Structures are given as C-alpha cells and as structure tokens.
Length: 324
Ligand SMILES: [Zn+2]
Image 1 (tube, rainbow, N blue to C red):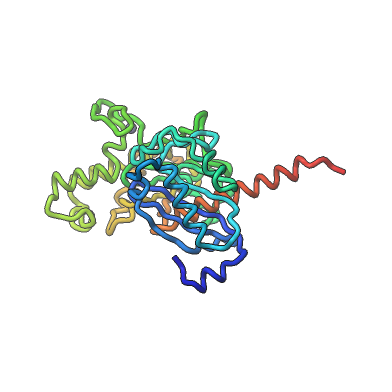
Image 2: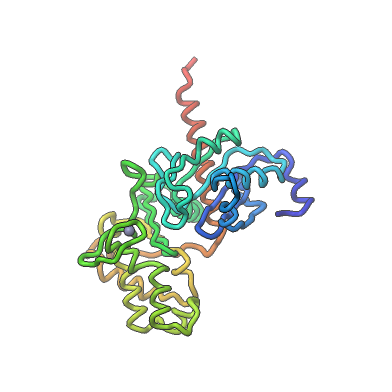
C-alpha cells in the first residue's frame, strides 16, 4: 500500500476499485476518473480458501472491505475480472477451469448489498482487451480481436464498440473449438479442444517431455527452432487463423504469458497464421499487435469498464428524462 502522505492526499477523491482475479493471484487497484492507478496490490488467491465458516465469496468481500477501509476516497463502483465464463447479465460466474470456488455463484448481488455501490463482473480477457483498446484508442475501430495465450487460450471479440457476448454470455470460447480426431479430455469436460494443444499448459507438458533440464522461461531462448516448438507455434496459429477467417478483423491483438516470454518467435507464429488465412482477404493487410507486458492491465481494464458502464447509465437516465 502507499505511504501515509499518499493515503492522506487521497481524501475525498473519487475512484473505482478494479480487481483482477486469477487462479494464483488477485490484483487490486484504485483508478481515478482521469485513469490514474493508485495503491496497486497483489494478494494470493489462496487467501480466499480454508477459512472456517467463510465462503471464498465472503472472503473476497472481506478483502475488498479491508482494502477500501484504508483509503478515505469516495468509492464509485467495484469491477472484477474473473478467469471464467460469466452470465450474459453479468451477475453470475458460470464456470472457471482454474477457480472453481465461484462456479454458479451470483457474485454481484451480495457484493452490492455489502458495499452499496454498483458492482460489475466480466471475463478477465475482455478487460485485458479493453485495456489495449483504451491505450491504443481503438474505439469505433471495427472488429478488434484479442488472443491471450496464458495457462489456457483466452479470446475476446470487440465489435462495434461492445464485446460479443452471445445468447448466454458464452461467446468467444475459442480455446474450446474441437480438433478432428483427437480424444484427450479438456478441463471443460469435452474431448479434443484446441486448448489442449495450444496453451501454456501444453508448453509445460512439452518442456517436461522434451527439455526436462530447462526452465520454462528458457524454452524459446534455447529451442525455438526445434520441430517440437515449431509444431506448438503452428498449433497456436490454428485458432487465431480460424477466427480471423470468420471475422475479417480490423485489429488483431496477441498477448498472454506465453507470448510475452523471452524470445517468443512472433515472426514464426505470424507466418503460420498467414499460412491458414484466406487470400486475398483477410490475409492482405493483416497486421499483428502485441499486448503490453503490464501486470496492471487487468485492474485498469476492469476499472475502464466500470467507468464506461457508469457513463452509459448516466446517458440512459438523461435520455429517459421527460422534456419540459
Ligand atoms: Zn475444452
């Protein structure tokens, strides 16, 4: 947390609390209306578990209460990204391969009851992409696709200034498109999902199998030109090229822990994607942008989302006011 002076200087300032909840870490930060981040902290997700008589949701609310109690500003809203499928009405966490404690939990209602401010949740990948969209001023920029290769394979689709959500909120589960004739079981319960072959989890398996003496961080530095790694890159390219062929995007943003590793062979990945992309379009003019290496992006993206929602809400209220 910040120094005493910083805390005192905070008096009466307004902020949104942005939270990025991952399988291993929870990141929190306060974001002011001018998009400045303060009091960024990282907690272990483990702190949510193993407290007798307290559910992980109750622990999370306690964590947020303890955090906001340390600052004397005015809390406008709380906005949380989960590594999860989130309901279309953005109230319920449906399913999280790496955070099952929140599955089928309505997170928003108890949070709003406890804190008395609007609470927003969404898939964390949407917030990561929103961060890039704000940084790069990509509003009104057509179709923006985000591909995030971390432990799994995350995807976000931003079309006409909103995230594609689908009938239930389950759109953009690109990691779970099926691969013909494969039978291994995915974390989602289905068989042969592309994420089994195109993800950080897969890279760990390849390291253990083929490069057992090397750390994961050395895999691309030492082995990027091996058949094993080139095939892995080719597997990553399949879902990316698939979605590009379907949506003919204006912008493609690639990120996630795997892509941000030292000497990740971007040119090879791009070559494989182009190899499977339809010509003349969308192949011609296709360009790739890489997400910033910024562990605060999820918190900032969550807060940006809350400010957008609050602004839309204000616009709606003004729009519905009868003319006098
Ligand atoms: Zn799956």
